Image (tube, one colour):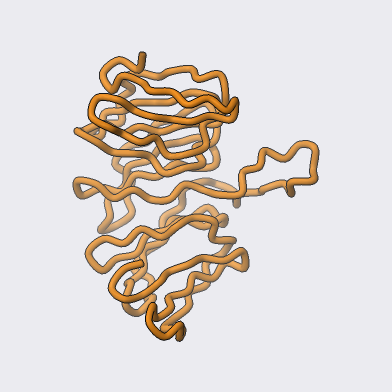
Amino acid sequence: FAGGLVFTGAEDGQLHAVDARTGHKRWSFRAGGAVRTRPAIEGGALFFQADDGFLYRLDAASGKEAWRARLVEKPVERLPFDNPKSRYDRFGSDVTVAAGRLYVGTHDGHVLALDPATGARVWDFAAGDSVLAAPSVDSGRVYAGSYDKHVYALDAATGRLLWKCFTQGAVVSTPAVAGDVVVVGNRCYDLLGLDTRTGE
């Protein structure tokens, strides 16, 4: 929600802007794949990624596309929940906007920093598996969980690995930072508090 509008994506690839007071549609934009992420709004710009492998920047007021940047080489394929090989990966990473950059996780296991003006990559960090939730950014560090059961702390300016912590289970939600503690949950039903400086 921003500027009196509610923004929501759909499995048919459309992103809708709806007037929050009346429910009337202001505009719709069709991406090339399902929209399974929550749009991020910053300074009148709207950012989201879709399952076609692209990150989009739209004008939040009109829905006009400013640019699109390829995040992954192939469209994202998600198996239905009744498939024995399903990873229950029904959501993708939202975009986190911080300190003049965009930070986003990808289905193929990367954490990316991009220029919001152009979509150009600033840095690219490869985790061991899918990064299915938005990274957190705090005090010059980026924290991201991965399906590879690790939490990563990266330098926000360079993408350099500061530490990683093995949690025993896939981490598919956004880490929460509270003071000097990073709080994360995993699919082993554990809740962990990690030291922001060391990952212990």
